[in-house]
Image 1: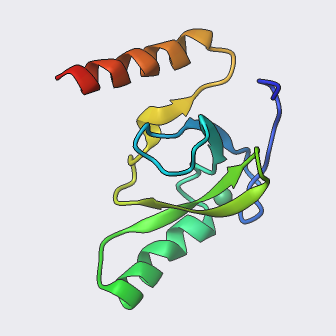
Image 2: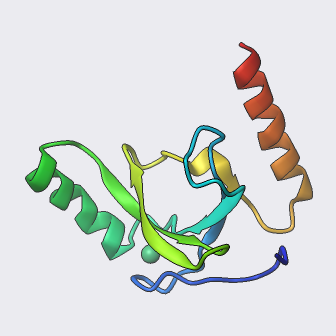
Length: 108
Ligand SMILES: [Zn+2]
């Protein structure tokens, strides 16, 4: 898996961001690609849909798993949910930082 591969959201056409899966997630992969565009219509209409269907304040973002090419929703509970797990391009220290953060979280 090359670090510089690019994927785009089918809903808003913006570039997907590399996103580290939380250690407790059940996907079984280290990272996936997620649309973190707050204006994405998939994400924006998700708030209304979740409210109508489940009476909860939540939405979801477009998620792409590059390992099995599966796409699906990534549930979010706020605008900033999961954003701390984004791996910014050309910043090699970021992943290390997040891993250290996860380690710290595990220890406390
Ligand atoms: Zn999008």
